[in-house]
Length: 621
Image (cartoon, rainbow, N blue to C red; front, top):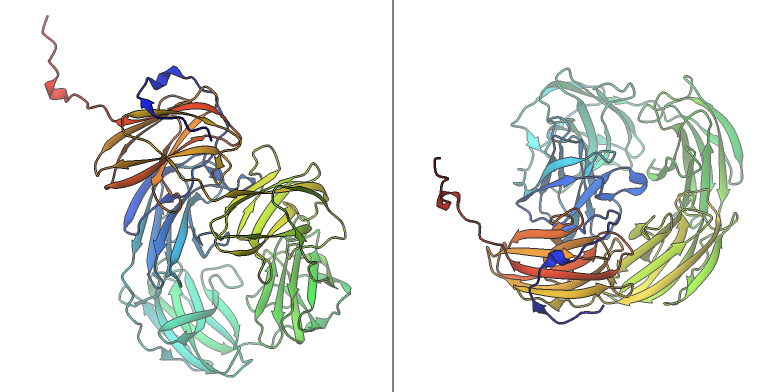
């Protein structure tokens, strides 16, 4: 970065800038007990394939701290998701949990101290709008009363009221207990004309309820619940009768002996079988039409199952036969709507493959193939600063989702920022990075981050010392072809320069500068402000579309305010009031990826407006 010395403030309107593509902001900060107002637009961050737009908010939480987030909007169907920082798998999600229309409410109690990401998003599509997001700590629910015993074959009438015990997710419930031997099968029902029933079964671990199964709409898709449950071990189990959206009223709950599990047909590793789903097919514990197949496997054996059908959307489930535990599930891991799962078996014994349709009422013909796959090949060593060429081959290794891949290993240190760029003219490039310890699991992923088409770029700050895997793969499971992969060490995030209130800095963004997580070049400047200081930040450029990103000074950058077009269509200006005494950081950056050039950045106090009552009134003619 070319960082010039500070000069006195000059007119920032002297520069005219060019347009650039849209780019979303980094995760902003939200505090527990706080509320933010925002807007989702088509220029915000987008999920892969533009499935939805979203804003991310970062916060710190304690283990055992009961949280509630509420997202309200009159403009779009609100959806909330919560992630541990650095993870791409949601811990919990919610669509209409507030029970007041299309607003979302999410409740969660973290198991560990740490930083979490709250994602405010549209349910689908890019048509967003204004929203209001709140994050609060909920009062801890009182310990529920001892469950009422229920006998096999009995039906009990109850009533949900606002005085009943409350679960961690805020739902009121009544609890019932029964004893079972390992392998016993039960059908648990809950019927109500007053609300949409949800029935859960689990065990108590001290004061905590550990859920083992649930059902919302039963096999007929109605509002009553029906759950078939196989007890994994001998002991006492608990039924929780609750509602879908805080409903109250009378209900009945029943416990009956379930019919035997559907008979399983034999299949051996290496076999390919034909089957049919129709009205005469047996049903699984959730009342779905299924065909089940039993095979024998060994500890450490890696198997792959492919379910293909031109008549329905295929869905595969792998269970351990001894206790019916689900080990893996897959919907669209194969081509189109076909299903593919791969799994490394953890014990000698029998396993069950369950072949069914994604929709309850679908039927038709299918083929199921069970194969043994080779263990993942050892990764190739990656060297920083070098570009390697490779190929995703027809007979190459495949991930659990069926995508061909090549793994590269490198050693890094905590706080090190690395960049991986994957290019291909044959397929839509997709990058994943994760720890090299144990079975691979991606910590971060990217599809089109290079901003130049379908090539991928990932910039990742390593969370600890150790070895990491960068996986070169494709967006689609049936893709193959040539690629190039470049891995570079960007070192630790550079320390920001200094900026005084009342000064202007002129700088230049180059392709050697630091990159935001979304791939935009930026320079960083640190300044000090006092509580309630009213400041104006202005940025213009004749070379790129300016973007101002403001955050608190700290070990990692977290956006608290930003602006793109506040001065004009292409000029940025942010009026901001400091919430407290302290140091803050401005990122003077480009609006889109790969944009460079000269700019001017001014930090000044907001002009004092003249009160209307002090303006002389116009004289009468």
